[in-house]
Image (tube, rainbow, N blue to C red; front, side):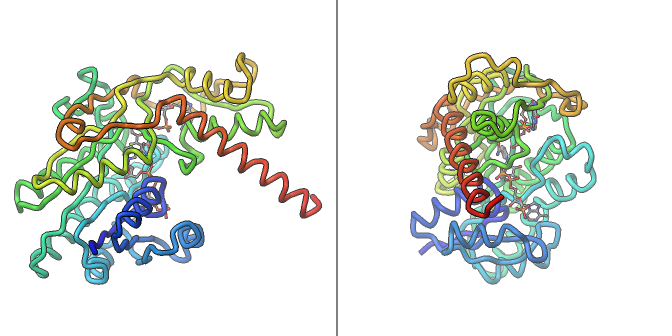
Length: 334
Ligand code: NAP
Ligand code: G4F
């Protein structure tokens, strides 16, 4: 039975990846940070077979203890401050966690390898946000990086540190340059989930409209469940490498709104969406579209869920969630 250690196991990708690895028969260890983290009950409920370890990617000694407890064959570093807008307001913290945390876990992996005599394989969650002010379209592994946010800069540091550990210490360290991927488990701060929740609430008469920022930005959106398979495939290769993971399609926020409102029968959403300066960014990433042909050729990976299917899945899930809240409130007599 293989053993895997996942940082960021309480996040969207951590949950899908842990689920996938458990299905494949892995023993899965998840690193959870903080005192009495409120996401622990959710993790225990959804994935009771995950072994929970406490630790923080800012704290090297906690990582070394996690390695000693889990003795991993595969390490997936998904832990990060991942919300781009937040990274301008908390640039130092984002740099430390999203950038510096990668160095800590690479170092813990190397120290564990050298002391145990085993060869753990390492995955780093790199991001299309590193392409920022894109220098080539579509973006591929060789495209010059030009990050546009403190988050993007921190991810570039983690990306190159991963390559450096591969080249300096011969660590089996791979980096997935993942384009935006979404699901019903996406955090409510990200635009797809913000829209799917608002559309469900509007359809149920719980709110009138939603306030958004830049409606013209373009993103290459895929389904998180498809993307965690690519992470696993990278660690099954003899040689570690870097891979772009994307759908190869791009859509504006307006197109996202078309599909989401369309799913509840609203064709004209113009009166339902307010553009609000508060959600504009100091520097925007205008266009992302990835070329994942290397992942297709080497890993045999392809996305399965289309943009329309993804957005509809999210709206339908939020309709169920919002209706359950109404039912719960009615039961409680509110
Ligand atoms: P997410 O839902 O925001 O999850 C982030 C995870 O990191 C959470 O489990 C969080 O723990 C954990 N974390 C935060 N600070 C930590 C710390 N100091 N020590 C240990 N863990 C910490 O993000 P996601 O969408 O699943 O993304 C997973 C990874 O892929 C992230 O590194 C993200 O930057 C990267 N990525 C995501 C996308 C995307 O479109 N989703 C695209 C490219 C790359 P709490 O739950 O306790 O806060
Ligand atoms: O959903 P977003 O916040 O995702 P963003 O910034 O692209 O970052 C996500 O994808 C990255 C991969 O490229 C990951 F590395 C990162 O961790 C994260 O998962 O915003 C998407 C777009 C932006 O252009 C933003 O300006 O939507 C635009 N937008 C317009 N109105 C909005 C809003 N974004 C948010 N979050 N909220 C709005 O009201």
